Image (cartoon, rainbow, N blue to C red; front, side, top):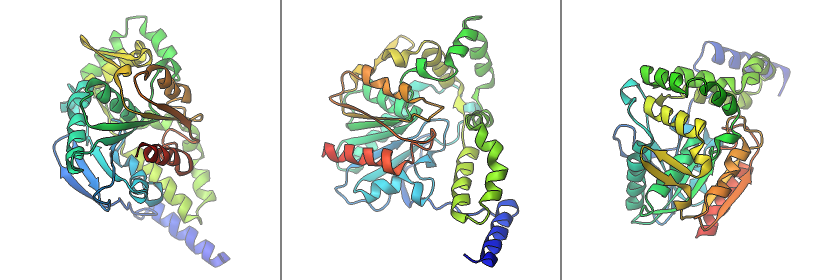
Length: 344
């Protein structure tokens, strides 16, 4: 690129970032809405063969469902299509104050089982492969454990926290909670109806504070690199769309997972009910990130000790941040492709 072209590109990018509509408009993978009920919109990505295996993408609550389809070269949905699968997506939509009474049971007993059955029916009754990221992976595993009759063929959990003893900051939170048994935090969350989207976004950015500090220098250094700025913009768009948690769900996460580490002990208590990870009876792929500061790799790997009923539990690692391991084509996507092919 000539000096004139470099200056022109830099000026155009600076304008688009500051006053324009951005560097690159979103380009979602074409899809068809199969059902559109609140907190359970189900989409089928277009282009799969009629006999392609079904893969249901399960997002976490505090992340937009387009995490699986960020942009054409960072889209797990497109990759699944390209490798001969039929990807589907369940989207929970916005979470507001009116949803404060929703808890883990709403997902593992209702939202996800319904989506799994719909996907299976759309594929002629064939079983479904679940792919969940972060808490989405935990929800997928608990759903399978809670109802072994569901048509599930396998589960892949990427960056899923399967032991809170390994989570950064949890030990300190437990020490503070001992002062009042965790009641203050529980009451506060209940009073406001959950964790707001704004708080979720601030907390997520805090995990990558160095990125935020270096952002001005990064932009200035890459003003003529449109592709790099487009990837940065995609991450910004993702962060700006982070939703919140319902009050009851977060209080369960706080009490049963963070304080008591039910998931790490292999049995989650929801009221008088117990859901054991050992009840998962399908092959499982776990992917952890050694550089992931949100869910350390050890918290993911711990699942190899609790998923004792699965005929196979593979554990792999991928480079990058919490989101980075989800879009790691050379590692995570390659592991997933091999895992699904081995099931055939």
